[in-house]
Length: 247
Image (cartoon, rainbow, N blue to C red):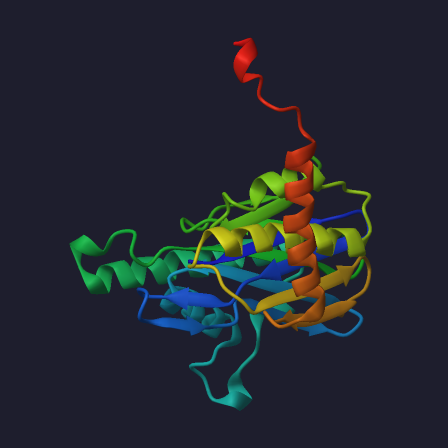
């Protein structure tokens, strides 16, 4: 499993993903699920992936044309004119890749090779965009009503984002909110694991404002995780006691 979040703010985009993939408790590995491409001063694009690892790696390979000699390669994401066209292109690749694997594996393979993607970025002269791309190849775009997307193991971290999100919040608060969301997910589900990849893209900037891999030994993460646990216990203690004898 996995957990990835793409969040849109007035100031820009904040993206975070875990790196755990597993085929059972005895086969756990670390794979990067956040891929970025850029043309300095012209465009910045990031793709986060969840689902069958072979499918997502094949989609990324096709985008980069890794099956060709290096001198013959050209990344199509660096050529399409709009982010919408980019989402359409990736959606088509994803749908075709899943169909190919389902066909090769036979009639009982349906659903085994599915994947879901988050596409985020900006092309010069246009607005930043955030898309959620489904296995069928169709997609939706973030809006004021739906300002963030999650893929993978979403249920544990979603309530925290819903309660704490504010489109006008700064990057520092947004990273803190996402980190608490991920920490809660890490505590609840072993299929999501460290390290975490974090990327912040300011509006009208075509390179990451901040990009880092956060490990389990990171002092800031350890302090935040402990502080969140203490804050929850303090909040629980501060709530009214249940009136057993009055009922």
